[in-house]
View 1: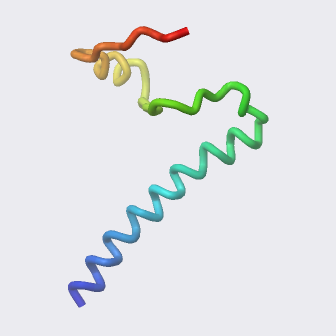
View 2 (view 1 turned 180 degrees about the vertical axis):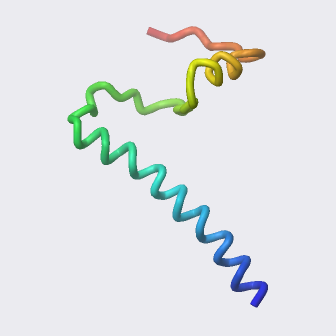
Length: 66
């Protein structure tokens, strides 16, 4: 029984992760936003400006290679 519960606990986050990855792709396709996407690096989402600003502390932003 404990193994089954552990398996369910591991499967659920994996399913949520897959959904969270697929959702933006569907939205990009729905609004024809592919030309606006840059598909390298990583994307961070923040609740608002305060959280974004707090994340910058101690963060070194690399220079863009144009």
